Length: 167
Image (cartoon, rainbow, N blue to C red; front, side, top):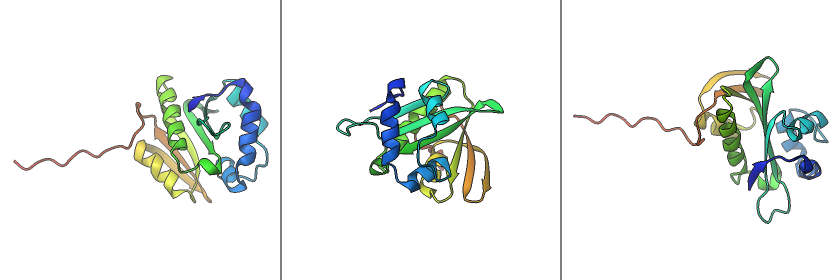
């Protein structure tokens, strides 16, 4: 279901992007984007970014793309982007992609992942904060930038230590 992007995925990714609503594309790219940005697609296809796709059995094609690439001023920090087409949202696809991205980042020695989120996505913000330690955050307008420490796999809900028992 989850696999690395291949160069021959370009047309399938463009088709998947076309099936996404304007709101979904806005939340991913923080603007009114009508086509998958060529430079971004190229960086996913040529390996400059780690990129994975979701291709569920019976779906008839790709339904999601997740990528992570170094920020220009600090290669220890990678910016994450995830796009899940509308019909496949809230089915665990994004979580599987996040887990794969974070595992690959951990294996490569990446220290932090940066996520640019819309504050109108409280469930996504809660998901990220429940699974990784936030080390920096800032807000501007409706956008929230969150840097999280790359956790060791598997990426799962952090648990608080159990309270000490009375003796």
